Length: 443
Image 1 (cartoon, rainbow, N blue to C red):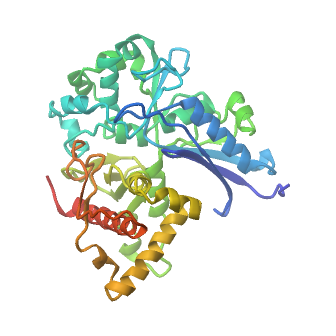
Image 2: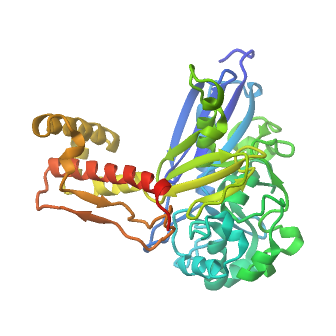
Image 3: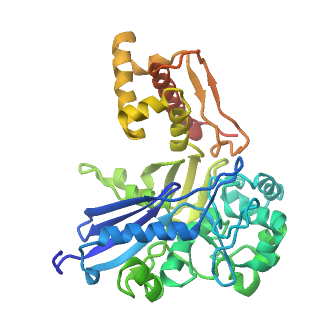
């Protein structure tokens, strides 16, 4: 049991494939961590669904695990970040299905990478409304308004009469923890086209795309009447019910949430070079690249900067008063795993090395050896005749084209480990070049 002189906070991160929790002391040191997988349904191409109950149960498991052996009264707060996925609840605030192929209400989350709303995104972009300037001129089908419009068109009762609330997943977690339905301006401005300059929903825009009638009632209660800055304490903290589920004390402080990548960006923006001084250490001179299933490139400015193909400027999204611009790649980590797991050698490598992570370590070492043997130590020249176009799940930036597809040029009929290593290298090179293209080319 830890001394009562020590104080702790909990950080919860829900990614695409798992929930994670960390216990952190007052000096910022991570003491305990726990990871638990979450389920995703992918019954048909471009449809990805999850369960808010499954996610919450995974969160509870992780929180209880990292807090085991620590006094509840020493744990002073908890914060949540998560993917920008759409959660649907009914009028009793229970899960409401978003699945056209199943009546299972547990399938009530449209995952961020779901691409079903392609036509709806095209409809919204066809309005050429000025609000689209804040998403680089073109709304992404990964955002929430295209998904809500898809629900209205394909599951009309869900929006018109059955729904009690739609949440971004980070906001759902704070709702589940507190019972308070306030929303984070981080999610609202970045993924819901909230007008952060006016701190209000743009009714004119929502009327034009055909969603105002369903969403504007009771002061926009379905999608959020109260917006809070990230980190703001919520209401009275943990509710009695959530405290029991998490094995914490009621009233424990709960922070207003953030999108997962944006929380990572905040952490990186806070990093300092020990020898750095002056402008080099200003938060507005830095860029954060957050890598996971997808990749996000983020920077902050003091004034609004509009750029075609780049999301934002999003005011208050990470730090109050500053503007966020965000670019990204729709599939990076998930694409690397896809290339690995679809290669004929994968099964044997997994059996030999035990995990994907260990396989990547092996492939990296193999590439260094091949470079020493063949190209005088130059790893990049190993793939001089092998090239990858990495938009296997569309292009987020700078082209904003969800219909783009991937391509591999230079394949041979070999199926050995060396062929996998070279393909892995070519993909990593392609992803790096894609980042460069985001900031040097425009549509």
